[in-house]
Image 1: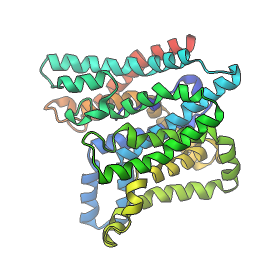
Image 2 (image 1 turned 180 degrees about the vertical axis):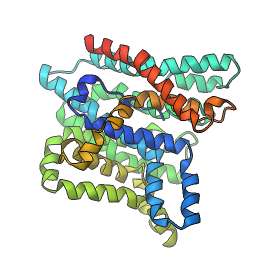
Image 3 (image 1 turned 60 degrees about the horizontal axis):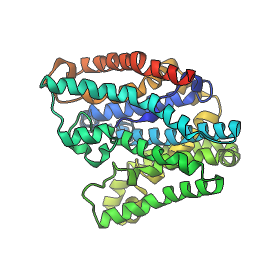
Image 4 (image 1 turned 45 degrees about the horizontal axis):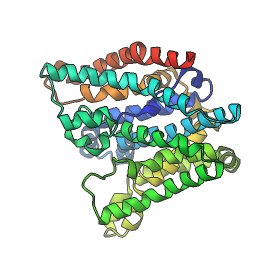
Length: 364
C-alpha cells in the first residue's frame, strides 16, 4: 500500500505540522493490518468477552482506512501547495511540479525495487515478469495480487496516475477544476454501483476508479478551505467528535445490514464503509480540525515527538513493510524482530535515499 503522501519536506513541517501525526497514525494502521494483529486481538476479546473493544481494534488495524487517510492528506497538501504557487507567481509550472514529484517519489521507490531485484537474483523471492512490469510503470493496481512484495504499490500507482493529469486540470481555471473535482467525488459511487452489478475482472476497490474520490476529497477541501472553515469553526469540536464516532459506527454497519436482511445495501454499495465516500468525509473533517482546530489534547498528541518521527519516516516505512511482514522463511520476517529490522531499513531509506533528494529538490 505504498503512498507518496507519506512524504513531506522539512519546510512543510512549519506550515502543517499536524500532518506528521496523521501520517503516523495511518502508517501504524497499515502495519498492524499487515501484521494481522486484528485476528489475534479479536480472539482475546471474544475469549474474555471484552466486546466493547471490538471497534477500537477494528480501527487501529484497518489498513484500508489508513490508505484513505493518506489519499485525503495527499490531495489536500498537493492542492494547497499548487494554490500557494499560483497565488505567488500567478501560474503553476508543470515542469517544476513533475520534477518535484520525481525527486520525492522515484528514488526511494526504485531503490526498493532494486533491492527486490537483487533478492530475486539470489533466489530469496520471486516476482513474475507481469508483476515487474506494473511495479516499474506505476500501474500496479491492475495486477497487485500477483505477488506480495510489490502488491502495496497499488496505492502509489493510483496517486501517480492521478497526479499525471491533475496539474492540467489545475490549470484549466478555478471554476472548471473545482467542478471536475466535485464530479470525481460524485462519480465514484456510481462506478461502485456499476461494478457491483457488472463486475470487471481487473477493477476492484484497489483501483484508481474506486479510490480517486479520496484524493479528490482532499483536493476539494483545499479548494474550498476558507468556506469550509467558516462553517466548521463555530461547531468544530462537535463535528470532529461526530466524525470520529462516525468512523467507529461504520464497523457496525455490516452487522446491522446482516440483521436487517441486507436492506442497507443501497447505501453500502455506493458509499462504501471505512474506505468509501462516507469515510473520506469524516477524514476530511478530522484533517481540518487537526490543522486548524483548537490546540488542545488532540493537537498535542499529533505534535508529540514519536508521532512526528514516525510520520517523517512513514513513506519509507510504507515502502519496506511488505518485505519484513512477508511469509519468507527468514529471521528478518520473524515477529517481533521484524519490526526492528523494518525501522532500520526505513531509517536507511529515509536518511540515505529520500533526504538527499528532498534536499536537492529544495535547493533547485
